[in-house]
Structure formats: C-alpha cells, structure tokens
Image 1 (cartoon, rainbow, N blue to C red):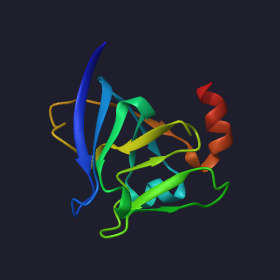
Image 2: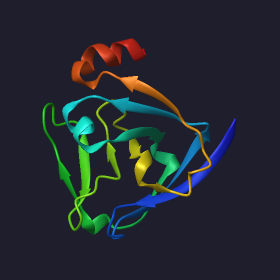
Image 3: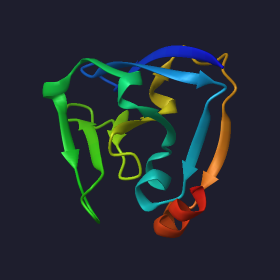
Image 4: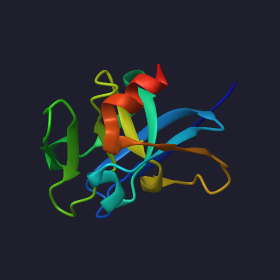
Length: 125
C-alpha cells in the first residue's frame, strides 16, 4: 500500500494541517443535511495520520443531533476542512476538497447514506 501526505486548510489560511492517507484513497460522499449542503467529501483517517500545524485557536465547533460529532470550523472564514465524526471519534474526517496538491490522485468515491446514518453505519460493518 502506497502512503501519501498532503496539506490543507481553511480558506483564509488561519487553519493548516497535514494528513497521511493510503493511495488511492476511498472517499465517502455523504447525503446527510450538512454534507449535502457543503459538498463535503470525507477522507477518514486515524488520529495518528493527522497533524494540525496551526490554527487551534481559530477553530470553533458545532454540535447537533447526538452531539458526538465535533464539526470544527474556522471562526474567521467559516470553512470546515476537517472534523471529528461520530463514526470515528478517535480519528478525523478531512474534506478532500480542502487539500492542496492532490490533483494527481484518483480517489475512489463511494456514496454514503448519511440521511439514514444508523442503517448505513451497520451496513459498513
């Protein structure tokens, strides 16, 4: 398995991070209300494969529903470039679209039925 590293961040540059992922990565295209409205493409990684380089103080979080997921946003520009999902509370979901330098990577994109989260989570195993 080939590992890649990419950097990314928010729109204004206050939040910057690095992430390691297997190539080709599998991304989840979720249809839940928040992901559908923001166009979020999920790259799920373990906490050890994610490094926040700067911007901890610029982050604010939003919680809804079960309150488990920590939706982290830059308080300056409003971009959610990564967050702690309820499906992987010990890892991160990185928005593929917030990464730089991955134009040469062909991800595998899989639909995820986040509108029916509990059933979709069971289907993942």
